[in-house]
Image (cartoon, rainbow, N blue to C red; front, side):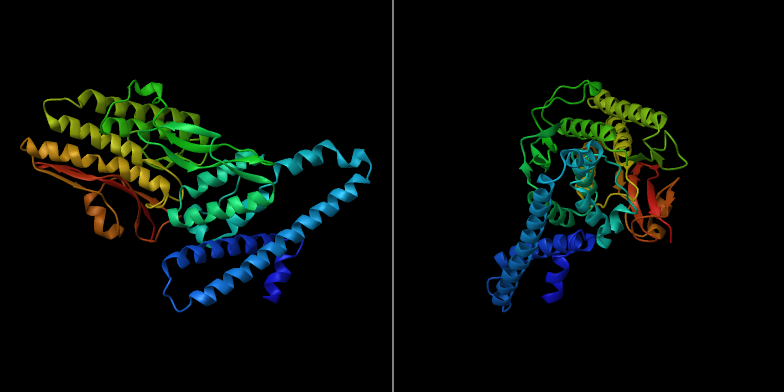
Length: 384
């Protein structure tokens, strides 16, 4: 433990921050494992290890607190013009969370999902939200560990979790996506709420049923497009030749218009006598929803990926309804090795980042067959 303690106590060290964050994560994982491993022969040794980790982290915190107190004490005896110099003060306020961001980007496991990412925020409130949105793309288990670590580090800066201050997104249920902060760092969180009206451009009032779920997902995506500059689209009807950034206002306008139009088409065909008409509209909307992507693509079992999957599962009911009307219908999401699925797809796009080489990164459109008519799927895949 000698070298661990030495590094943890090193002042102004990015490596010390990385080690501290990972030790917090290790402690959290071991604490969770102990809850279900009561008969494990390593239980006592694990408990001793946790006590050692607590001592190490407490000593590191006290060292950091002592250094800050020393700096403040020396400033009290300095000339007030030096202490209150506007530019230095402003930069210090903006960069409280900077070290957490550096540690996040230095995590090699995360880099598989977020690529060579650089934060663009210039203040702590925006940086907190940018870091949290980044975690919505990675597997939820990894994201939860990092979210806990970030809260621990923020608490050492005098900030604490605030679940009341949040931006509410319209949905069919209440769900805290990530919390805000209060104290020395103030930031809003993000929340799904069944008390917020859907995006007015959808022209729909809340009812019970799948249309509400789709309206909630589309409304949420429309908000994310305005919040997150990292989003792209790969919607074939807008641009069949590539994955386009929504920072381009022209691309954003075209994609948003197509997404809203496809939702409105689902609305107007929901009660059509011929269920095939409604099925086609639902397939088109599903494609628009899944064509809103990140680069690298969000992991399938991330918060973002699960929300898109939730939308896709609504296809099951319209498929069954069409079959009951006498049609032969097949639906197949395209995942796995690209060599195994390319015969079922068309106009696919190749990526050189993220995912597993030679495998599908995102299924933009499912393969469908209605009687004898084939509707090819479409995917993003990683080059071999």
